[in-house]
Image 1 (tube, rainbow, N blue to C red):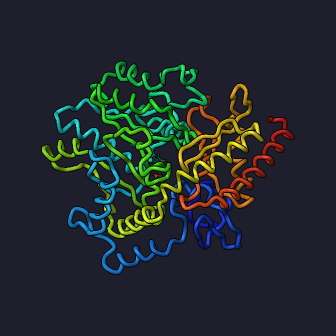
Image 2 (cartoon, protein in one colour):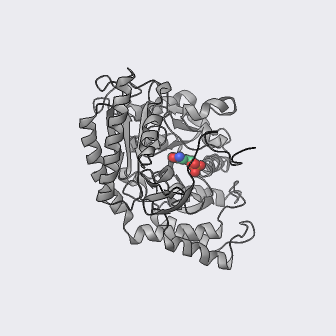
Image 3 (cartoon, rainbow, N blue to C red):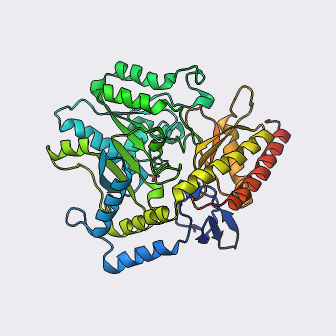
Length: 449
Ligand code: PMP
């Protein structure tokens, strides 16, 4: 007899059953409290158990929960698209709804290829990306992901899209150092485009701040304007994967705003619904939409649940909540506070090689030797061990491991809901302090450190 019929991420592991959540806290059925220091998977951006979102869901459900997008539209979906277009840069005003971040990036890939086909160009079918990146788990999205651990089992089914080095200064893939390098990692894209041939490349996709595969890696300030210029020069679309960074997480509505660079397509997910419903979106520029409108008129993608009215109503309520409570401003302020405290931990523990991030997308990189920046062997599972110690003590943090062996080592993300207060951050830091101390002692006693 099976104990459970639900397939869990690691078979055989025991996962506590959550009974409810409130704000930054989750409670399991045994009564244990967890601080949601990672907003789940950087998703629960407005915290748990917000009454008005439940009401928005109910109010929509009372009228109609589902309509099929080929037959009808709904006020909720129209209003949500309008709201997202309002936040987006002037050039991006059209929204395609999907149900997950993977679908949002994969839709971006398809729209980019279609854009060129509408102009009679059928060779531009590659969407380049960077090593140390994650754009989703479906085959198209995984093809664009430079996340070796997640790729390896399906490599034979995937396109070899990732090519460019990540702007990862702490462990520079080009073995150079900023600012002397002149941000060579961006120039490298041009060399690659020339080697492959621009006539084959539809788009270049980037996470503005690298999340799941590297732990809040922020590029040098000049990087994105250089990338934008290369894309323009070779008629390549730029896709910003803001699935993790979007909707205020980094202190701005879209992280790309930090660098004043406007992409052609934006992918959104996670924080857009803050986890209250599965919902994601692809926002597309007028240049692309005008081309499709004067061509086939049909965006060749879509899902049964795309533009679901009930999900749209929940997302609208989430966006109003973010706006009314100035959560992006709080993310900027609390992000600085959190990073300052993480830096204090870095002075205390040489296990912490790097502290980085933007707003409330903060990362720590754990390192074997702070002088040489030598990472631990991935088989030592340092990140997993830290996660377990934190979990035991009632703190949730997110593992960000699995870029490229040899380049990216052990990292965690500390990304609480955008509602977090200074007092709550102090509690997070206290538990991290104890946990990193405990891990350091364990590693020393095992001769690993
Ligand atoms: N893009 C980025 C930047 C992500 O962080 C993620 C999820 N970690 C995805 C895409 C995929 O989103 P989902 O898991 O909702 O499919």
